[in-house]
Image (cartoon, rainbow, N blue to C red; front, top):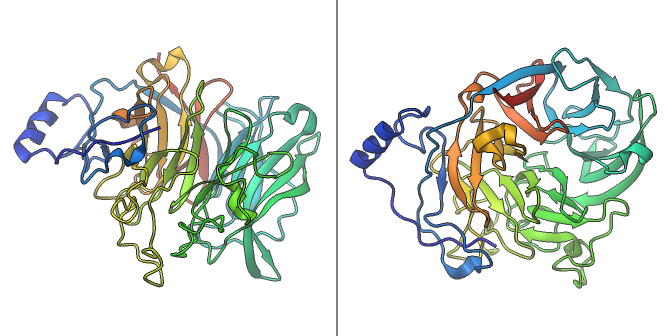
Length: 426
């Protein structure tokens, strides 16, 4: 898994100007960081190397692609409110979760599709700030079970209780969904800030869930808390997996923990044909991160500074290698500003040309797609920002590759949000 060599300093102004002149065919501004391309470690991770072999003191601007495939964007359906996640059904339809507490059924995956609301008892949903009805995964056996699982905030009598994973069964006509089981409860919940929460299946079919630290400083480094973590569990039973790194822990919650030291994980994606899982994570006012997950590892976010301060100190590094020398550095970071990165999806298929196998990252604040090209070890080698999705649709949240190998993305502007279908022009 990844390691980083000591990073090189930023380009001097004259060198930056020369580089921009050379790459004038790409859409960019005065520097890579300013344009939103972010930064990558100075050297690619060595496959199998320990992430503690070195820690980056700084980073260089990410290299940029000189040829970006032209993308076509069509609006599949509109009328959503903060569409949070997308799940594809075997019959060509799709489900979309909406953060205020609605599940929408979309009639198809091309422009002109209709959306209808699925009846479901969400009366216990706690909708506040970033919390509500969030991530979703459709079960692989949906054709027979008709089950899907959501990540949602839970309240009792108006009091927030926790964030939980809930499994639902969609009726045969798609008109309603019935609650089947609470798959996992006890994810921390405070005011709704930093609620996470994205579920995705890994290469073995286990459910991997990225969670937020709920803006409580002690939680990311607390292995007995499910906040600020990636979790791994059985999709059917909700039990922690027997090969989880802390499965032998006395504390039951710790047995679910796959990685810790995270701030607010809102994107999780499996790299096709591998067991590599990547996450996207919000930084405070700099350094959003894309991380390559290594079981049992610490990713270095600690706003409690080892328990020496109270409250929530957001001035600490996203990956604090001074306090935690073994903390895993990010494979990509946003640099001096934040993009508010969110969903992740891998592109697949020869129709994507140079983007075949690339990792797409949605940005809320940045209102764009970033496309990261990776080497076999998971290091970022190129960063591209397609012009067609750089701004015109506002804040972008979910990203899922559809069964037709088109990329599906939701907007999350809160006013007539849309489900977009994105394909390369041929």
